[in-house]
Image 1 (tube, rainbow, N blue to C red):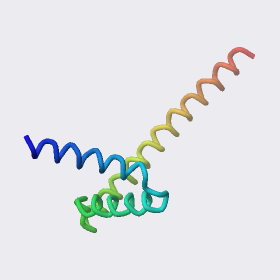
Image 2: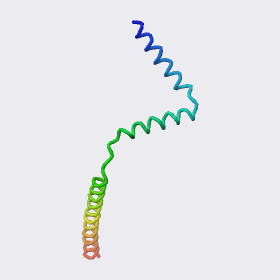
Image 3: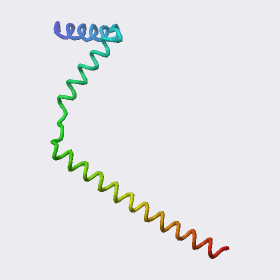
Image 4: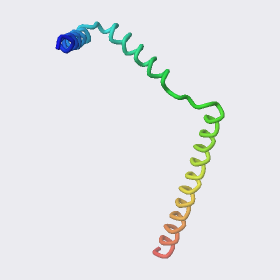
Length: 86
């Protein structure tokens, strides 16, 4: 029972302290928390980064070619309709 009250009091004090922090202390706290979170990230190896980059570039090139193809087909259809109509 005594421990529950202590925890509750501590939590209440911490919440009040956060509200009372100055702007620069909030920024410093955010920076520390961000650095600790970034340490938890599993960063890709250079080989994985190159592989992922190559895959992304290939997909973009294929997408560009497909869109260009549809554009050319649409352009030919519109020219044919205009020629027939006019």
